[in-house]
Length: 211
Image (cartoon, rainbow, N blue to C red):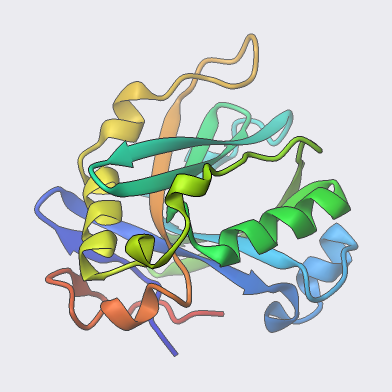
């Protein structure tokens, strides 16, 4: 199983998120969210110095997406805002796993998230759901086809966007009346990107394991 603990780059250390079927986490997400066990759960790995950083507000929540074009690579950014904290997942926009997950979330009317939080030796899991719009993003036909299949360089571009701090510096609140206090970002690792981990200059730290 591929480790999803984190990556080290010149810009710092950050986690790897995943799209993982709900059944892999046992009964806890199902009890909390009440969705079918095949529903994709959007996971996020993070470290905080103090768990209280995440306790400010648990409502309201917001979930959305945007695109970033880097050369010949199109990236999709998922953004979850919980109170005054934002979580960003940077993904390869042409990945079919993303679009399959979006369709399932759209049918359910919400997206399921699972945050793995490390605070020193402590580990905590925060499970939640945010409403998702029935309007989903669309992808131009120009981005389909073998020319836009992922490579090891794709993973490097995803990591570079996260490590650069760009998302944090440009983040704005998606919830009126609430000012952002913390912004966290992960690379979203899908099955199509996993084979390139061994080809990447990024360093894997096996603290957490997937699932």
